[in-house]
Image 1 (cartoon, helix red, strand yellow):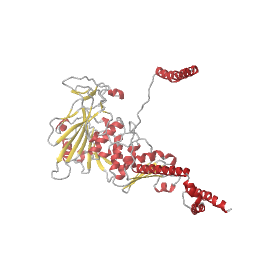
Image 2 (cartoon, one colour; image 1 turned 135 degrees about the horizontal axis):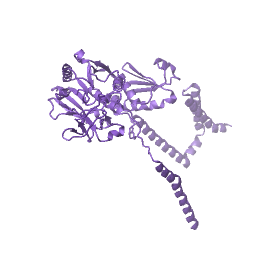
Image 3 (tube, rainbow, N blue to C red; image 1 turned 90 degrees about the horizontal axis):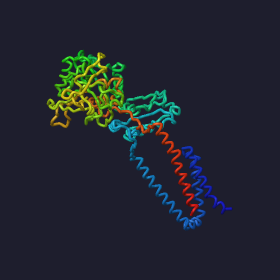
Image 4 (cartoon, rainbow, N blue to C red; image 1 turned 30 degrees about the vertical axis):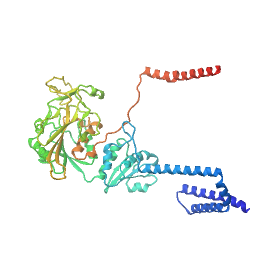
Length: 524
């Protein structure tokens, strides 16, 4: 009887140990009954080893046991190596996005924002657990580039107390917290998701807001105008990027406020007073930044004013005869631009932009002292600046334009549509401080920024210019990404050919080959 107990005590100990482990796995807590099971199992197994020591010695000396132990040791070593590699990989992981449009990768703009974070940002999302995969995957991309992102998802149904503390009443809400500031994103959807999250990240991680002034009083695009030629689309983008945007009537106010980070002059329809231009000049000479957008005749091009800065504003209309614009449903008087200068504004910018009615703007070869200028946007080779053009009486609709290139009279393409200019105000010699510079960007078209034409491409370029001038280069606009369309469009005849090939011809070849092999083997 005692011998049987000695034999079966080991099985009992193993059973108790397995029960204790399973109890801990299912419960997740090391309770007292679980501890009793584990300790009892170890005691029983120890007793079995003590009472059956001779049998264990013989078993260990057997050849089969030695081979088995060697296999177990080798398996343990391989498992340890794999675990070590996995641990190191989890701490120093590397990702590569193989998609052509990089839809699974954050844009360089977002990466710069993350790399410049100085304090932790806590992101709390409120999604149902079953719907949280997409947001968790997206925030993981942010965490990959910065260790200062702290993230958790809270299911409002399972933890209603936390949702109540945050004032969350809707599913798909995201809360960002940093520097004592909070940004709430309600009813979050994944269209333009990266731009929305990055802009919210900027708002909570930056101290204060920069102020941008928008000149009025000359028929500029209206800040509050939601119609085709209004400015409300880009206005909202400016506000979303944590700027204050205020209107300024310079003829009434006489001076540009000291807190002005950037002055926008967007499509004046009447001439500006000389005193206004003098005030703007003094502002730039003092290290200020200005963003001019002017239109072709009859709008004032401010030719004399820009001539003093070393920029020639052409009295022409840019015509694009390449036919590329027709692919996008545009006519020759709406040039398409694909050539951008080498500049921080257009770094990583590779989208086509279009300009509904533009005049040429060209830097002179001999620039005034202290000024440097370069082209920013340029049209195709098959374009020109048309000097003799006629308009209908609709005031800028540009229907009924009669054009034709006249060599020696018109401006041969490619034509500059935008230029960027900087002026060194103070070289700060003898100090470690960078030179103080005023800056100006001039576009020969303003309509590309209006509601009717501010698509993701045009608005992205506009915001790139604005952020560079405001010295917030990492706040550039993030255009939406979409997978490359690789569908094959076939005619009805081609579809029939593919069907016959795949459904009849290829299977028939396999059948014939099989019959031939069968017949040949029968003859052997």
